[in-house]
Image 1 (cartoon, rainbow, N blue to C red):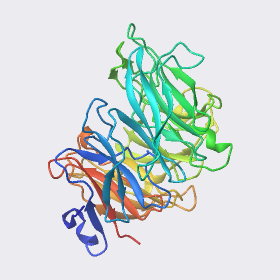
Image 2: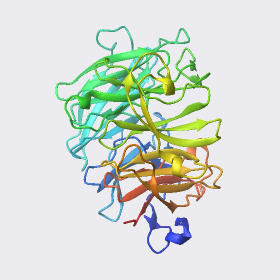
Image 3: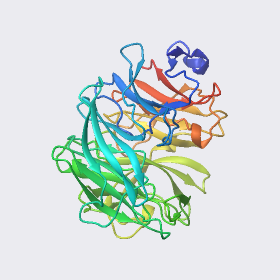
Image 4: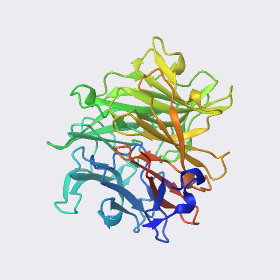
Length: 409
């Protein structure tokens, strides 16, 4: 670790501390903001080396997941050595890391679900998918780089490509693995699910724990081999909630009206049933943060979903320019990046309103990342579960690295 006072905004220099967590010549980064990669006590998290903010190359022998112990001088210890590691999730009790090994290829290969204790012991293989997904004729390839685990720790979900390499416009789908009695089920599939971003609800209610937040990319185009060629077109993406058995398909009231477009990042507010997305609007020309609650699906109506509720959280900020964000587990704080019109970007911390109709408040500029703001160097800030520390990426040194900021009250 390296203390970086030069990345602390001047007015906060007496209060805040920025620490560079990784220092290798290889690019290193945090896993995506929505990933469940923290222990619930906020003491340890998983980062990865030879990687970028959107994933890693499954054929890269240098890629590893590392456990960063914040209570032990931010010490980093490798926890995976296998080729093709992807989709990490820490169990809700903080005892295990679940991850996948990507040895897939179109119509062949295998996807392996593994588990290991965070001290590196008791590594075990839970499921090997080297055949057609049960009750289907599909073989999965190109697994998504993010997995998500249910709040009761009983199920883990990941998505992937289902094509056979012979035709374009083939389906993608979401797989749910049961952990205690290992099995897998394809819960839904279709041509517009190339970028699902699956996120289990953090609610501990037994019924709500089956809800998954998902992204649908209308108008995407994909090659016969599963290579993404067009992410979205027309009125853009929309966001839904679905149960992990494929039922209960619902809409979030965002985008799809020709003026507001979902940027493609969304997350739950802590353990609530309210989610947030970031939008691009044409009028006014802003990047806003909008909260909302899922409503019954009628059509892909987005903002015009009947009987829906939404709230502009960013309305108190002059000319919001927010892109990526996350909240703490109690839903008290939100961290977000602003850029690229703010030079090398900026990291802001807000208090979330106690009233769900309220706006973000107590804005604090907590880091100047000096990022080049390229896709492969996105800042992607997120919070520890207790909301006392923030994390971001930057290539300000010339090599992508992972950082932490802390010290606010």
